[in-house]
Image (cartoon, rainbow, N blue to C red; front, top):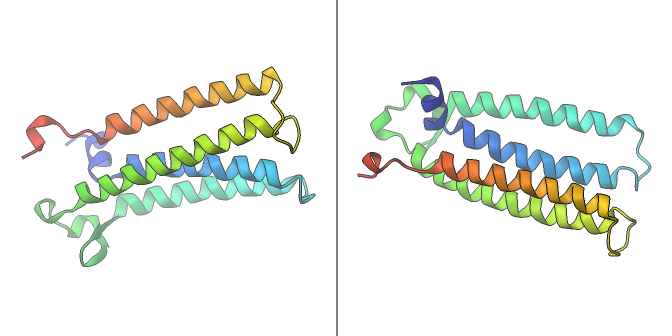
Length: 156
């Protein structure tokens, strides 16, 4: 089994996608809210650093552990025929879709609030930035759907 296939089987790829989308939303919210609370300039850097550290921790946990009906167990202690990774994978698909929806709402909100804290139309440069971010979200969504597909021979 290749490394990438093992990463997919253990849902590490989907955990990474879900985490990155959620972290992007948190970073966008922090970038918008921290100046409103007159936070020091280093506060945003600390948040981003914590998000990066959290990504590493979540990937390690996704690699080492598997969620089973009996609770969380080490992945190597769960035989492949008793694994419910496919069920967890389906749940992660819903998490990814929810995170993408939240990211889309964040994008639209940012596009209308870049000009100020009102719902006035944003300048063209802000709309272009939102459009490029939307393209990125569409690509991430397509990648998530592609990674979540089940080969025909595995659908038995």
